[in-house]
Length: 351
Image (cartoon, rainbow, N blue to C red; front, side, top):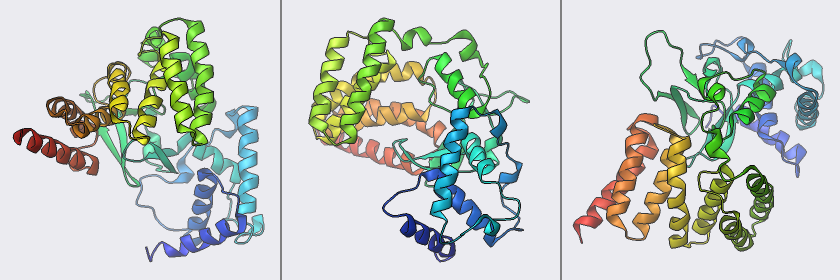
């Protein structure tokens, strides 16, 4: 804490200066990079690579992306106004747009215990990992520490790959995101074979499109805290769409219904919706995937809370088999899961 105060002090002054506006995570991260470079311009990093080694691809970005980066650069200028009044005070050779572009292509979204986005960070050495929609490695976080775990047997000489995005999208959407944000077109096996595309939009293109449009209204209600109204809309969409649970838009509605029910402490209804998500999650996040493990844990916790102990034990053990690979036995989430299993076992012994 004491060692970090010098940087935090400058950040606090910047936040105070821009209040009540709140800068984006990327603006704060670029500011931290600038402060670090000003503080230790010649320091040797413990990382194998530094931000200077990363590709920005700025010239390859489309007009909208460049405009967006321009807005971020303008926000950064206002954010730093008190600490860095003009560009002459920036680190030598520092290019703001270039730095934002590097972040767009190379930053990692830091997730919490339930894989929810909480921050953004730059890990230059890990940015060298290439993308695949069927990767042989996954990244999980322990606080801000990035951990890389293999999830498949990797033959000697085969490169390590991770997925840059949520794979629960049809191949054309994944390819569009790759091209837009990372400036390449994914040609992995899943994209070339259009693996699971038909499943993702099962039930009809028109019905899928209508459900997708309705989900934006649902997200708006949730963002405003209108949970009861959002849950009513969830139920209406789920019951009226006639789409199978493996349809990705129907699956999103089921996820929303479960999460809202948990927030409202409607445990039985939450379990009802959660159980319907497990088969689709196993379809799209096959084998060892942290997102699938977290989803299974949610359902297992609900079963445990409701006293459905044998089912809870089976569900939580399934999650454990995944997490000991994706997270490792020493990860705090794995240890928490082991405690849940112990609680479940004790409860069953007391029956």
